[in-house]
Length: 150
Image 1: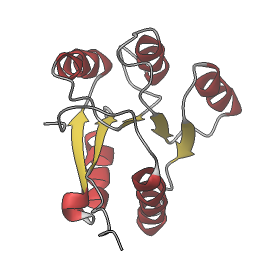
Image 2: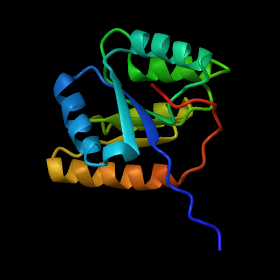
Image 3: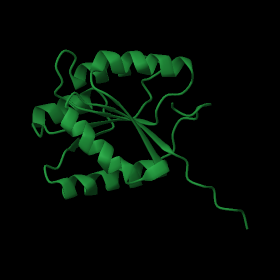
């Protein structure tokens, strides 16, 4: 009987301009210890620059969590830039936002978001959302890469 394959670390990039939301997300993901790593970047242009550097090292994250409402470059503009870049268009992008507006949901899917998750305002509810997200994405198969995200 073959030995079970140990689960690999799920590497996430959170792009969100709100420091309080970033802190909450980091606290929620810390509950998973070494099973999940989260890099936080608080604006779209910096995130795209970081992702390009990661792509050059073949060390892209497994998934991106992306806020919709950000100043300067909003989440839709970031998503559009990702989908327009051949080295990053394959990345799963989960829109993680407080916006439950149907037009935002529709626009996200038109830009080929992987999913759209409205943040629960209750912390326990948010923890439950994070748990579902981690459970799902740890079972998903990703495009192979040579290195782990740093």
